[in-house]
Amino acid sequence: MQVYDDETMQWSAKVFDIDTGEVLLEHSVDRVLNTASVGKVFLLHTVLDQVDRGERVLEERITRRPSEVIDNSGLWYLLQADTLSVYDICTLIGAVSDNAATNTLCRVVGLDAVQQHTERLGYRDSGLDDIVRWPMQPGQSPTLSHGSARELADFVARIARGETLTSSSIDVFTRWLGAGMDCSMVASAFNVDPLSHYYYDPEVWLWNKTGTIGCARADIGVAMSQTRRVAYAVLANWRRGDDRREEALAQMRAVGEDIRRHLLR
Image 1 (cartoon, helix red, strand yellow):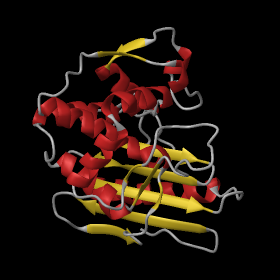
Image 2 (spheres, rainbow, N blue to C red; image 1 turned 90 degrees about the horizontal axis):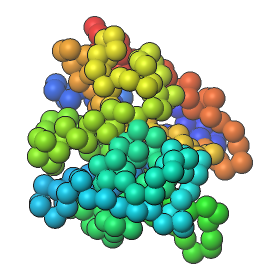
Image 3 (cartoon, rainbow, N blue to C red; image 1 turned 180 degrees about the vertical axis):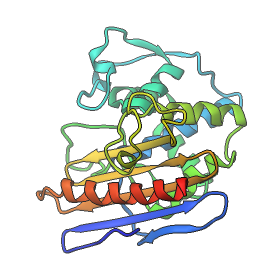
Image 4 (cartoon, rainbow, N blue to C red; image 1 turned 90 degrees about the vertical axis):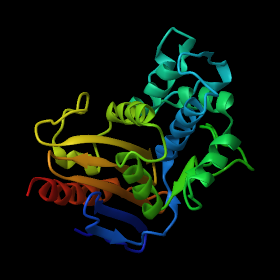
């Protein structure tokens, strides 16, 4: 199991067995890369932490503002409803990485609160940097999120172990990410139904979050068989202006194939 840097592509990757601690892949685990939408997981986690503290309810209804509607990634911009519950907004983020939902929720929760919560979790090299903006202006964050494989793999492993949130909130968090429809990267090797895989399909159970921009692909998550659990974070960046997606996706699928072999051996 390996990924390969070259002159214009860099990787950060970590894959390990959650229960035995066996490391299946480590590559530049502390390298901080652009992770596109992956950092939205910290927004979702912050919301559930607030729920656990009694500061928020998932039934609260929020109305989006016109300035928060960003198309491209998501579904809400195609829907007529302007007002949704916090739960439904988070579901859109987990399932389709919804940009309008991200921006609306960030306004209510506060980007500062998300960043402070991420630091309290112990992460210094990973986080959500900004709301989704397009077009971007000078002085705004050049990245939506950033992260290292070490921290992001640790984050999903802690969730799988039942840490950082109450058990009920962990069930909600993994259900949101279990609805994720992007199985084009590491998860492509598991051959699951991209629209329905929050169960063994047929042998692997998956929840994950991906990030996609023109110069990056990122996939973090947990894949399970009935006897093993693997946490993974596989991040690739390449020089802006190049098109390296086919090579990046091929290497990510190869990592996924090795994960699948480990799960089913």
